[in-house]
Image (cartoon, rainbow, N blue to C red; front, side):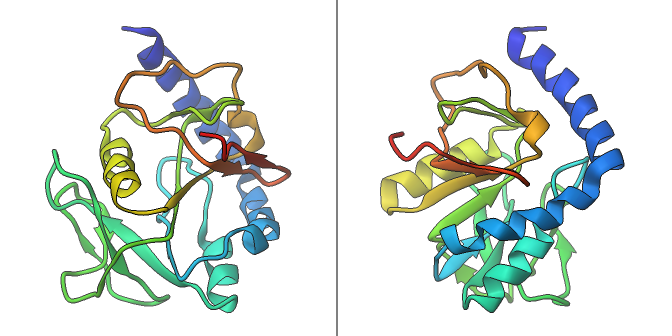
Length: 185
């Protein structure tokens, strides 16, 4: 097991325990809505102790942003994003994750809000290890000025994340108490 796998395992357990005890902190993410101005904002539905972006999604809708969710159509490809409104029907995508159906409008996001296991002070992130977000962010980075913002509990900040050549850095991370800006990336 390498350093990334070791950190991944410890952060999965720590995040889950923190979410079980302090999951209500997610509502505090709404204070960052003003910093997240975009026409189409990609978010996610939480799983496995991820901080819940749904209160923030509601605040962004009130600001006039449209929300979209990721869809995995292929295990090796970049994700696509489809429009999502509260109450829309969701179906399992190719990875078994609830996602909008193919009838939902395909959208190119201005901002991608993404979950993570850990992040450091330079904008590096540790994800679950499947590479879905890294492939997707790399594709979006080549084609537009899309911004990538991690959502996390404060306890997910670490001194240093191990980085591989394919890892995509973030422009910022929003936690319940802070906004971390890495726009120099």
